[in-house]
Image (cartoon, rainbow, N blue to C red; front, side):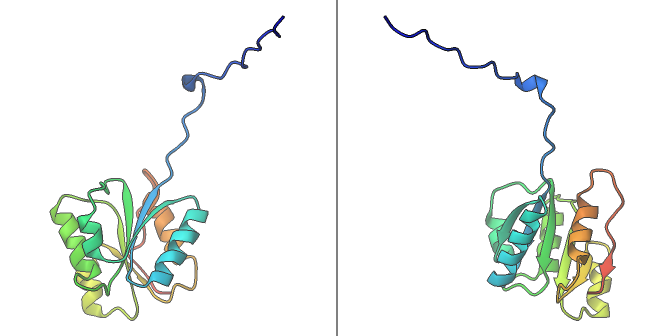
Length: 150
């Protein structure tokens, strides 16, 4: 005589569960591997999905859509600087939030970036970048600040 089979407990229908909000996507482009890994790790701990690239060329070559992403770009990138990369993305129709990270930004760079992106100064010694990303990732919240001196 075989043992009666037990039915698995009923699982809730997917429509019965509240939808989990998607984690905001942050794309980080920096040619410093240590900083790239550190940002990927720390932003991941803060609940962001992070995609990391070592150059602007790598990001442009990736077929993954960046429609709902916040960009964090190093200004001094090999081949294509962060501002030039941002202009290329804008030419392709991308209109998301972006911030340039740089040391000692000149008045000329600030003026050039003013309409396209925020600027955060390196070294990253406070939560300014995280605060900027949080503000930029809000669906209908306030705009992130244009410039933050670290």
